[in-house]
Length: 514
Image 1 (cartoon, rainbow, N blue to C red):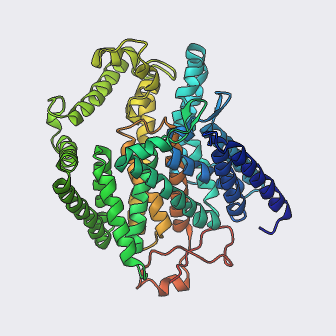
Image 2: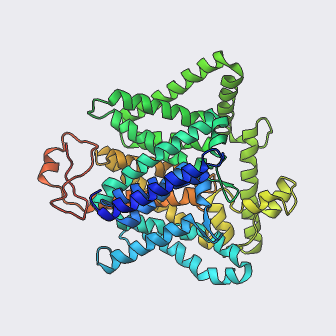
Image 3: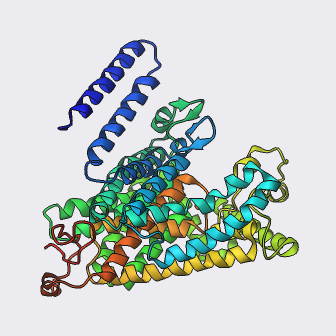
């Protein structure tokens, strides 16, 4: 770093880390030096990356990386049990938004159909929130997070008008998703080691508490990125392909139905995009998984055959929904309580207030838990799980059919962008880092209908951030006029990123480097 102030600051911080480490020697309590070290490294990375990216997007990107790596543990760090990481990141992002607006760099409303769909949904939520707050107080604000987290789309989309942001922000997300994936794999393959890692606590809560809904969309992004890198013109092709095989095998070996559905949607996406070469590489990962499980079944039958049975049970529930509630396996039971909850919400809303729903802060869990799980009202599961593990039915419960129709408008716009992304893949206009965003978008879209995705910060914030960046890239491609270089290279489409900063320093450009 050339800046002398940064050097002095770094020296002071590292001295503090060294002193904390020295004091902790022999005590067995190494949380302070480790915490200081991680914070120091993060600040150093933000300071260096921040030379090339706007500060707000740098912080949000590292925040998303924190969700990838530490999951719930990072998401629920708070200042005085009031301001959580998600709210702090949103405040920083909105300040950056206002700064760009004041400089005339962006429009007040993004020129995207998704912005209109989200404004309609958010405006209705804002109009009804004062009434809900008067009834349910702080719980109304808590439930409203499923709407105000959508503001990350606006922040990321407007920042994504800069070519530097489009080149570097996804690269930061790719880099930070790797340690998150490694931790998730350790939790899967070596739970004892993971428990040791998760033993570090802040105010009694684990600092590292990875969550599927935070890291698995990013893993699908990595898979798609490696598939593109492995089929390109690169001396590391074989390395990328085998790495993708291993990651695909691990994500499918988790035995999660949402992952299998996400994988199927990614395959359909690639078929529609006529990327059969990428599709073949994905199925290579499936073969890799089956070979590994068969070998493991011979080495340790209790583990290998158990994992094969779990995968088979999940696929059986997906392929044959009629077995839900049969009690034949635990996976059918998991699907059963979801369906039971969704049906109950639809029935209760239609009976009580079909147009406007129960409102933010209303209880939609206690009676369900008492009926399905035979739990008491003070059971901790009732307090923890307020969303119905399906964004549509959660919106239906909170905002009625009026809100649910607005939610479906958001889904329709998403599907239209998926169609445009398919065309961009087909024409070779999607670079590997953008492929990471789209792999993440596809998986996150799938889990929206099976998990607590819109309300949990560790899944909602990465989802809306990746969506904003990727949609901005597509919209800028549409507005560009093809250059001579692009026309000349049309016969040889490539998946490398656009690059021509001299021609348009603050906007994406149509030329594609070869």
